[in-house]
Amino acid sequence: MERRRFLLFFVALLCFAGLLEASPGDADPVYRACVEQCEKTGCVGDKCFQHCNFSSEGNPIDGPWYLQEPLYLQWKQWDCRSDCRYHCMISREEERQKLGHKPVKYHGKWPFKRSYGIQEPVSVALSALNLAVHFQGWVSFFILVNYKLPFRPNKKTYYEYTGLWNIYAIFAMNAWFWSAVFHSRDVDLTEKLDYSSAVALLGYSLILAIIRAFDVRLEAARVMVAAPLIAFVTTHILYLNFYQFDYGWNMKVCVTMGILQLVVWAVWAGVTRHPSRWKLWVVVIGGALAMLLEIYDFPPYWGLVDAHALWHATTIPLTYLWWSFVRDDTEFRTSVLIKKKK
Image 1 (tube, one colour):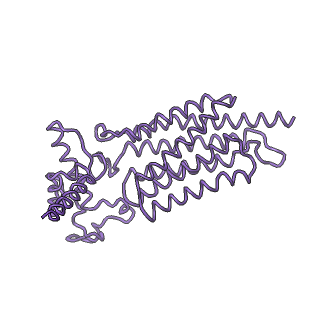
Image 2 (cartoon, one colour):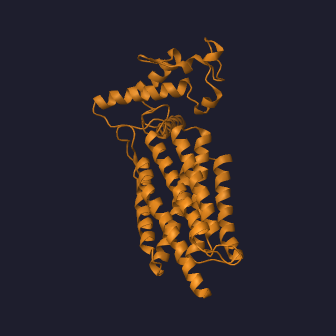
Image 3 (cartoon, one colour):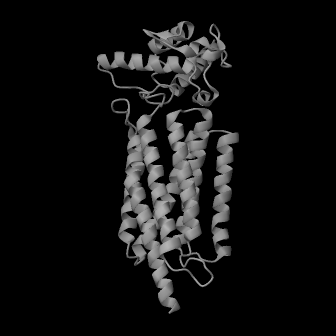
């Protein structure tokens, strides 16, 4: 009898744990019933979806071949189930709002309103703006070092970190590009590319922070700094993509690398006499405050703007100021080296 009671208790505990893993929205019986009915009929209320006329392979069930979605649009993977989930979610949230309830998450995500097939239009726009600001910052840096400042007799730039900042620009623009793609459509491939690009950017930024703050100039010393961090970041990316996509572990890794580089820059800003150190302080303090938006999660206003979108917004002016500091640092180091040479 005791064994039976224990077994029943264990089963109930497993069921309760399963409920904890699900989001409140997709555990709602009304939402579940709506999705189930939609997958059978292809409609939610007066809205019906063409995707429900196709098989899982994308072949038309009861229509001619020319109704099949073009290959260049199939990456979105808006199939019958995803359309049913979206419209049932919107319908259910409208009902809950009328009853005075706050928004809840569905399948781990807040209920965002799509726009022209884009899942999170505000985050996409802000990611694109971040990409544009990084591109503008890198182009202005490139023009400065290659066309405005003098060269060494061996035709190389005086600034010792030119190549490192060029590589940083590539990592940054790549990360924001995949951020825009991921927020456009959240599928397994775009998610992995977004997370992997962000980890690669954070890892390289930490390497760059250490090399610049400690004024590491020798190539051998730079390799000694970079090698273990590159090995760790590469292993972490491979772990996420081919072994287990652990969100919690990835968050710990990203936050740790982000805090470490902020600490490195903050300590350097405190001890250096760099003429533009105030810009560095603004970026460090602003970046630290912006990270709080990633921790403080709240439902999207008007179904469009959430904490993550606001974080994207804060990084735009910080990025502009950051590249301004890089240009100032280039001019400062170049002038110092030219004076030493004289």
